[in-house]
Image (cartoon, rainbow, N blue to C red; front, side):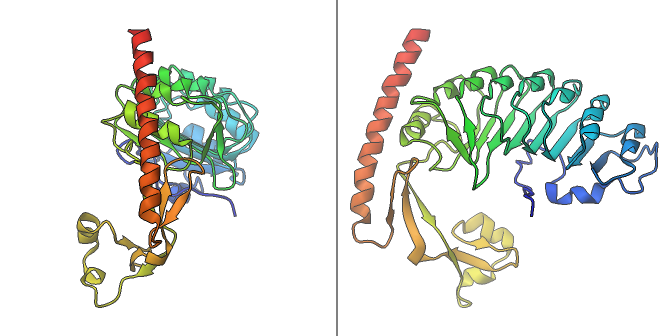
Length: 330
């Protein structure tokens, strides 16, 4: 079964329909020339896909497993504001260059190209989600997109997206949200030093185990006022959940009350109230392969204290690195 990402897009920056809703907009029997249609999904099996060129008010297009012809033809749709391409293997993405009104772009499993520079033509691009771009490892093609506010780079659980270096961040002066999923950093410390250039950054999203611990310490020092840049030396994490007992008052609280007042409780898609299984809770040390300690182990506090001291030394070193850079640039 092919991957479909859910509606995990930050709705402060995205208006594109969620991926799971895209089939509701299939081209189907949409009449040619319809002025009411603003959102459409097409794929390789759609015989009437060329009707998209007759829709005067089309703003959003999803291409699911598109043909080469479909990909190349969308260069005509210069009025598009939102575009999602899923499961495609174009040799290049030059066809995107003419879509100068694009504001939101999702490239998901688009694996045949390696050059991102055509995106530099999208001077209105505000939000960009890139997932599983198998042949991309250089992201310098993003530098210079001054309109960009939201950026997500992701891989998958079985294939992590390589990033050669993070220098491209210096060319994104208005970025407000930087989000990384399953990635591999290919540069040595201090690889994340370019985050210093992100003066308008409000939020960073990154789990505690994707990068070397020194990089997290560096970002904590570099981004003291950025939401999410406070990993600390360890994170308490549970690998499984258990249902709340029926006699626990939280099991009967409304969903809005749970979300507002009880962050320790999660709600399953069936509406079941869940809490972390204490037998499967761990202190996960910040940093790739940094280790962990089981919460109910008698030596867990000792291990956490020891790692906290190491992490503090990393932060002190980060202060020195950042100070020396500022002195050179000042």
